[in-house]
Image (cartoon, rainbow, N blue to C red):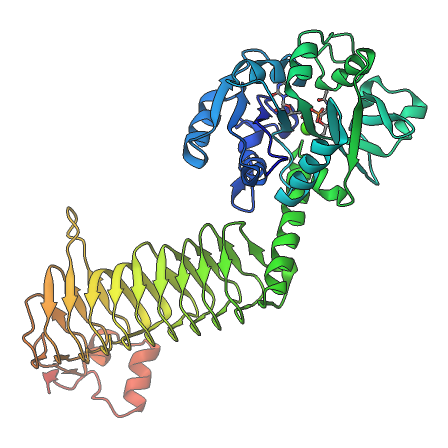
Length: 482
Ligand code: UD1
Ligand code: CA
């Protein structure tokens, strides 16, 4: 691409005082990505040769986050936060090649899109400007730098705090996104003053300095002004989060996903959905969750880093790192913990918790059960109210269950233990040793009824009276077994 910038400098050294947080502002997240992550993602398709992130406040946190999300980007430190111009100077010093176009981006504008940035860079490439500013007309310009113009040319940017009453009426604002001719930026960057309300080196002063040098400065006005909005406090964080979510929901609806209530549906930026997926209200799709064609998720479901197969149904479920097969059913009220897999047409039902559990296709765990550290074969049924007893107080152990088993209700699988193919078990069985294929496992002795026990030992209670009314032996009767 001819408009490709040589370098991108992201300004991310500010503490973000108004966030009132121990965490630096650019690490606050919306849509499952940090503010910095959104800015870097918007810039990535431009394929600049070098990306420099200026860090300062919370630098170790920002640096290690950067390592995680974009190791190719380079962090450089602004020791003291002396303003956006000063930060840009630090960034410039880290560039290996000061030629061509340098893009400078505020680190706190998470709604900026790659398309807008691309159009902006393309405009700069042909406009012949020493500096091009991304601007927008916004309904509420308060707090933002205003664009002063003389015809098409930009003559200055004045910050709210330095603006007079008349300048404050201007609604065209600086988005904090700039394209520079690298050589001309280098020439003015050391000449910024601190002669302003905040006593900082404003990058925006470059406008008047370049013009005084006879260079041309322009602004590219974007129609989608929402993209230019920054994020300075928690109220703006929530507002940007809502705007991003609206955009993500609209994107997936255009791709053929039914979202019954976009207002109560939250979808992270990295989620992937296929056609004819249906998302019911109150659903949060988090992280790298993928949902395949025809699946229905929700209502009231949170899935983090999960994969849901075609035509599966997941109702009122909380899941993390689970893989659900085609046509399988989950919930209502299931808790899928990491490393759960469920095969095709399988079922994880109501009040069931699973962890590190591989449940084969057509197998069912329908009710009130904990499955931890287990492998279950195909077409096996686990009876209601069973527990995979995986923890002896010291170590976790594994249970292995074969194919086509029919296992009773209220079974305890005391791991490590295994159940062979085609085995059955009775209700209330405590399985402590291997069940061979095809065996019926039972445990516990025959049932004993101590006749008259309640009448003799709980005299005067409602239970005793009900028993007497039903013909139970009275208190004088001999207590005996039957
Ligand atoms: C800035 C612009 C303003 C514009 C607005 C858009 C200046 C002087 N003003 O104002 O014209 O309308 O963004 O949102 O630039 N930073 C550093 N080091 C510093 C100071 C800031 O790295 O010493 C970084 C911050 O982390 C932030 C960016 O620069 O990502 C902008 O700083 P911020 O303080 O948020 O500037 P605004 O007052 O919002
Ligand atoms: Ca800002």
